[in-house]
Every structure is written in C-alpha cells, then in structure tokens.
Image (tube, rainbow, N blue to C red):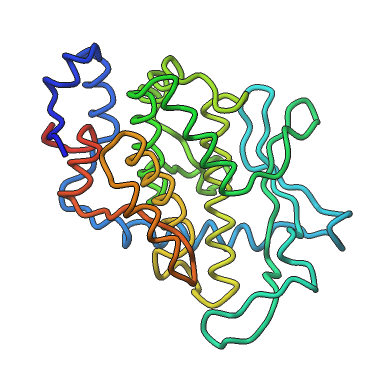
Length: 274
C-alpha cells in the first residue's frame, strides 16, 4: 500500500486548512491505550441503556430519545426484537439457550415519523459503500470518526451527566460539506444512529455473558468493522482479509486491526505526527 503523506493530500486538492483542522481535532494521543480508555465509559453507558423503560411487548414498546439534530431524533424502543421470548441465542459463557432480554430497537424519526425500515448490517454496509461515489476524502473523514467513536474518544457528559457522542465541530463541518447525507439523512444523524447501534451491541454482549465491556466485543468490534469497510473502500485494506473474518463465529465481524502503525497507514490524519 502506498504511503499517504500530507503532500499527497495537498496534490489531490485537499486544502491545508482542512487537513490541519481535522488533524488537530482527531489526531490520536500518543501512547493512549484505546480499549482500556473506553472501558469505563462503555460500561456506564450500557448500564444506562439497560435502565431505559421497557414496554410489555414489541407492539407496546417504550421509547427513549438519545439524540436530536434539527428535526431528526434518534430513539430506541424497548423491548427490541431479540428480547422476544421465542428468540434463541446461546449464552457466551454458560452455553445456555436464552433471549437477549435487554435488546433495544434503534431508529431515526423526523417530525414524529420513522425514517425507513429497520436497517440490517448488510444494508448499512451498502449505504456506506455508496459514499465512495460522492467524495473519497469525505469517506475518509467518516471512517476516522467511526474509528474514534469505537473507543468513545469524542463522547462528553451532557447536562444530565450521561455520556453522549459529540463529534468535533471542525471535522464535522468539513464532513458535512463533502458528504452532506447518507441515504437521505444528514451525515451527523447517521453517525448518531451508528453510536446507538454500537451501544445496543454492548448491551447484547453484556446480557449474553461478556459483562461490563471488559473486552472489545460489542461496540468496539462493531464500529471497527465499519471502519474496516471504509479502509477497503479507500483501497487501504484487502477486501479478501475483510471478507474472510466473517466466516468465523461466534461474532461474524471483521474489526480493523488497530495497532498504531496500522492506523497511521490507513488513516494518516489520525497520526499526531502527520
């Protein structure tokens, strides 16, 4: 893979100001151990999610608002599909057959109406794939934000002292200019949705045996799989390696290896020494 330098970015028409803004906000802290950094934040956020009110069944879900952006709202409904009594899943530790009792159903609303259908991972992959036809550097920014989201690097406490995703303003402004929408919704709304989706994955892992976000199962591996897809679309990772990982159970994901050397090669603007 070709080494991507600042000079290459400039030659491709990306401005010095854009590169500087994004690098200043998104560069990883040298020596920061990402998984341990995220662990307590993830555990706190998943415990909050488990405490959300739950309805009697799928038809009578209780709704909790997580994010709001303009006229768009990102909600979760409980119970989710995997909380149904007839849903069967093997507990990762005991092997017991059970359901995912804390499951939630994330969705996007606009003016009180649900946007689209429930999205599968396959559908989300397809939507991200379409971004490469719009703007490649925008896709790269999108991938960097997802990578950072995996480790909750851009989460802040809100007025209620709850962890919430707050993408850096400068990087988000550049992203919105280059990639205003993903499948008809503003790109920031799509990012908020991915954060809630990742939260629900942490909830599932906790419920089924990998408790309190002690490992990368859940949020981290889910979002690193999306970041890995972006790396493939940027032609910085092998499609074969990305695809092969899905063949191996139990989680059927393909998280991007996140050594410092690897990330600096794939997303150079995340490097503090760009």
